[in-house]
Image (cartoon, rainbow, N blue to C red; front, side, top):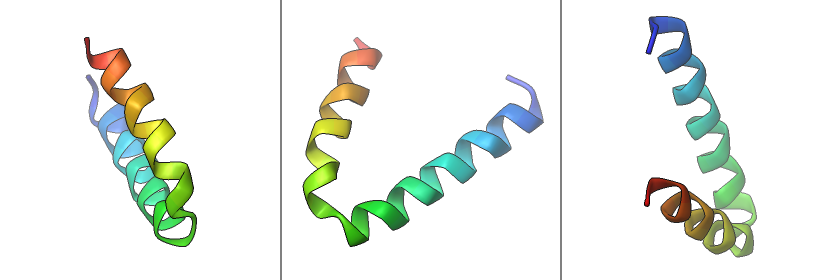
Length: 39
């Protein structure tokens, strides 16, 4: 990964964390999606 890709990824994670604080019910489906992609 290039540095730009890592920075963009971190920004996406940051935005996702902010949204998950305001919308907790959205967290579980997305976490299951992430764990699905990691397999």
